[in-house]
Length: 125
Image (tube, rainbow, N blue to C red; front, side, top):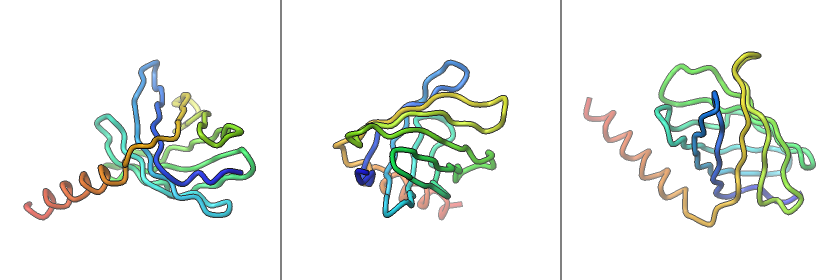
C-alpha cells in the first residue's frame, strides 16, 4: 500500500451540495491521522482515529470549533494511491459520498496560517 501522507484536495456531498476540503494526512503502518479544513462554515477538523488496511480506509473526523457530532468516513484507495473515495455518515439518515485526490500544493502552510489567525483571535478576547 502506498503511503497516504501528504496533502489532499477533496469534495464531500451533503443533501446534493458539494463542499470542498483540504486535508493533510499522516500515515504510518495502519494508522492514519491528520487535519482537514472544509471550505464551509464548519472550518477545521481533526482526524481523531483512522486506519488503512490494504486499500480500505476509514477515519473519524471531529470539528474543532463547534459541537458537531463526529463524522465517520469509509472508502477505498486507488491502486496508485493518488485518489480515494467512499461514503461518510453522521447518522443513519445523514450520509453522503466523498472523494479526494493527492495535491502538490503546500496545504500545511495554509493550515498553519489559519491556525495562527484563530489563536490570535482567541487571545484577543
